[in-house]
Image 1 (tube, rainbow, N blue to C red):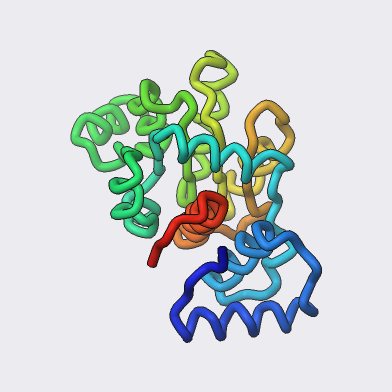
Image 2: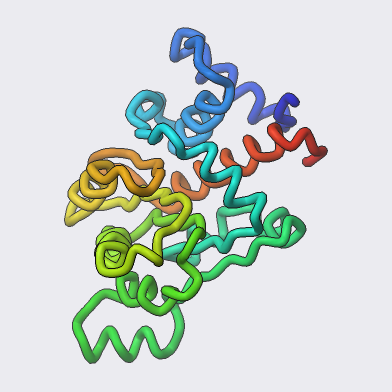
Length: 214
């Protein structure tokens, strides 16, 4: 089933395809690469996206099973298709701005992003976890999984941004093989890119399910 886009988005994706030389890719992979390129306005990111072998299949299985969606920031949460998730039966969680997180951060010196991952531990198993802001959230998540394998998400979209820890956290994510992932190596990233990747996976899921959507 073809993805339905508005005319501006359709033209943008055609331009991206032309810029990339109309690569002969699987439509699902092309959807992910094109959408992150479109969100960034940067064709240089197209081939840099690192999509692990089982990432798309894992996302399909997770969405079908009504998995939880975990985000590291309200900006990521704002960018994902919450209405569709609610209709599909998925719940989404973010704890970054909870009052107790502020308190614990002041007491411990740990970042709110890292603490928010700990606060959402019960919702992590078999989730899709989307990190687009804080490298410390991704590092904390991977540390938690190392401590307790039962916390493993079905998929990690790890695209934090910044010059401190972002590249290393993503390198750590891509070095492991237990959990499917999608990431963007280096310092580039951000909430809009992470949510764009997640929304691409929703599109792919709908394509596979052959359902109508807007």
